[in-house]
Amino acid sequence: MNPSTLIGIVASVLLLGVVLFFSAKDAAAFVDLPSLGIVVIGTMAATFISYPLSEVLRVFRLLGTVLRNERLHTEQDIDDLISISRLWMKSDIRKVEEALENVSNPFLKTGVQLVIDRAPEQEIVDLMQWRVSRLRARERAEAQLFRTMAGFAPAFGMLGTLVGLVNLLFLLGDGDMAAIGQQMALALMTTFYGILLANLLLKPVAVKLERRTEQRVIVMSMIMQGISMMCQKRSPSLMRATLNSFMEEHDDEINDHQGRQAYQELTEPDKATGFQLWSKLKTKLQTRSS
Image (tube, rainbow, N blue to C red; front, side, top):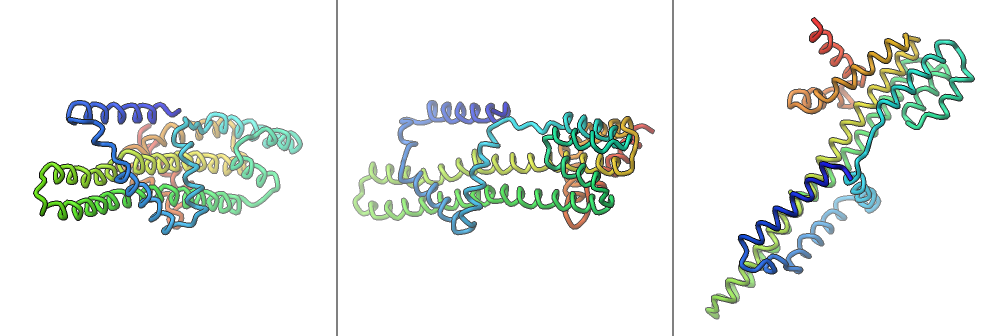
């Protein structure tokens, strides 16, 4: 499991446990199945109305991706690019094809195969950029689904609270203060569940998926730069230095606030290519070295 995810889950459980233990007269009072049902079933119903069934089921399978510690194997991709580039410099097509069979990254394999087939560099760039744009659009939609659910959950929590308040008003005429207090507590439980579900599960999952997309797009842009250099038969040593610099700099580009804004501008499908992102990084490197 991803260490940060594990820490978050443990911290959440501890937080809820401490709050219930020290602030609640009866911790069992925070367990109300009808209130939980209104929030969960209502959120799911609204989601199924908003999105196709196939898309909802596909996105929920991504929960396993959020929990596990996914590695991108960028070092392996760079090593594969360098070794294949050396063979390509020697015009040894047969050995290039043999080495290509051992490449595990399908995006890298596609790019190298196009180079072997003597496709024009610009056509290779266009095709690979289209694949990056398609991946980005698909994964943004997946993250957006969880953000949509995070908006539904508090709304249905408030709906459950309104239902509870209606029942409460019927009890006011009886003057039974104990029953009134109990109904008021139950009415507020749906709001509690809605806020908890939205902010402790759905929004964190959406952020996790968006972060995963950012990292994958950076790696794919790095591969595109390597394929472009391979088309130009650049030195393998220069290629390694370039790609290593690319990966060293990309964390700054997607972590700090200004870097994130620049990243989002550069990775818009209709505004830029992965090579423009690389140009920005290269300019930053030159500025630092001077």
